[in-house]
Image (cartoon, rainbow, N blue to C red; front, top):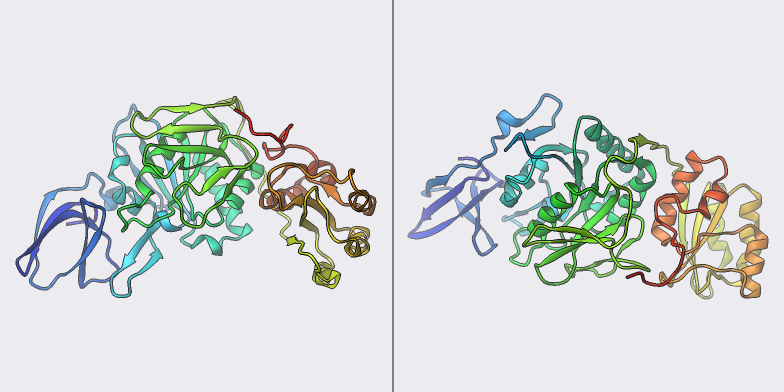
Length: 414
């Protein structure tokens, strides 16, 4: 028997039936029950009957480069599943009760049998980390892997990622990658062992979005607390706005660009955007990592900026229209004079920076601060890393929309 097989396990007069899951120990069997819970069963004296074999065979599907292919139908599109870890790729250690990220892409396919028959799949592992351990170096590896999968013929790419830093990674890839096919990030707010887990619907909807004609970097997560649809957010305009709700992700300053109906599998878009095949594949993965994001707070000592000496770039989350205390201005001007690009965003999130309204703002502009418009602080950080490494005039680039991060108006769109 192999993980993914449907089994019936009897031990001590108790019978459990479900899908055999990967186990962290050789002593236990882990079975996912129909209600969504996983149960650990001691192998000793257990009787196991295989009711249905998994359609996927890891040994025959694994290629020499460590990737894998699962083919169901030659007429179906090919979707590359790239795993970086996170809750959507997590399992439970029944010795400790801890949830840890250890699934690779193939394990996710086993855990989400509803993916079968929707596409031919290629599986690839770029990293196996919790998203708080994400780094710009992994962004570069991820962007290169996505480009390689598209070059190899993938009709779409789904990136499985932890939710806590997904907005940073999606933004980074949107700047690094010109893509002719959909690149869809998805994750899970709740692990697979919980009946309320969102991993199945998010994964299924992400695959459907990756089969669509929208050639963009998107984030696909629950649209509401119900299991009826996923929202599609542009990677440079999305933010995780709740710690645990399944609909934690929101497009800031606009409606989501689209949605995927879970029942009908229909993918619809509210606004036009880059279409499949319109853009030639291009990868510009260089990043300047000497960039910091600083949040201004009332009474903050300007000496707190001393650690920024020598930084290539700084993104400041200012108040309101993009302000900081007046006693910061001289210190910021020193940074600019030393060659640091300083970009201003707002803690308000909704609305845009405009430093021409009040004296403080005008003084900041005179000190050399660059207005980032309504670019989200997290997106501005990834953008500044990219423009410093790829544009001859990073100051001008920060004022322009390169990947949908800057909107022409700061009111919600219908």
